Image 1 (cartoon, rainbow, N blue to C red):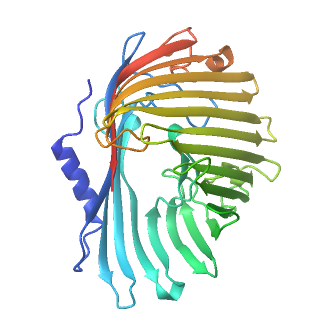
Image 2: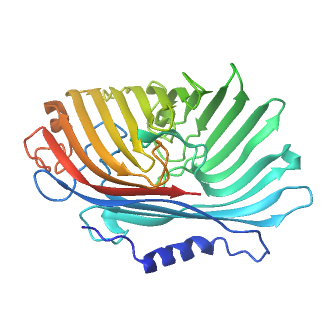
Image 3: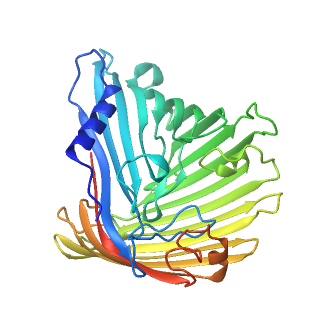
Length: 411
């Protein structure tokens, strides 16, 4: 059983996050937010919990399939309030990660601790028609499939941005960044422009984004670009439901779509992606999320592939504090060497003191997960990984895990 971070660890983390907030101004109340998950588990073949992810897929369905301790602790402070109604604030967030089965160090190849966000923001600026300006490293314009923890449109980066500047009926955002990955090398100039506020139908909102990635100075590097069109619909098939449909396309280094891709790729290398997410809440006792993802990558070097991911997590409320979550996910990657397949199923009885809804936290879950995969997936798996012949389940192409997990977020 893994121990949770000690009081001393948390205190030191908070002090690290607060260091960037220590400015010499009188200020309003400090806002504290965060996210936390931890647990322990095992595998049917013995040993610690293993997690199932298909080689070539960029995500995995997460319920009963997370093998790490993970913490985010964030602090925000407004430090100046101006007569024109605008405010200047600072934000910092510390992040801790550690894999199951390894010492709780939050460091080395099995974990990390870092200050992942640190920026200043000037909000509600009259000169920007009430828009905002920020500078630093920020998680920005993040759009995800929650059940697979896949951030398909994400402009997080180190740089600066003009945020949601109203012009007419629309809102315009621009981000200049040099580094959108924690370990990105070489640094690349990237420009992201987003236009939102389109209302094509009642309850619907359309956003359009374009990203241009400049050619870096390194040899054999090239520029690239990508675009995203996203429609969100409130009240889809009933009040309390919502639907998201997104289309993405990129060329060259823009084939990372939401991120800076391989800068050695050229204009004949391209990627398409389709995202469909349906979140429902049919009364207080039945809610959930359904998602479909299809991505096609065309590569001139012969590394083309197609990825299809379909999953659903319905949540059944038993009473005001107890629910049962069930998740079924299927990933398939058609690539050189054969079509890889992975199916994963989880059932998780859950204590949820804030209510039985899909988004209610905290949660304390007991889970059982079963997965099956084919021979092509086993061949493509890295040696020692879960799906490989040298992994937890050996030459078998199926396996089961079980455990307990707590998850909480707060603002």
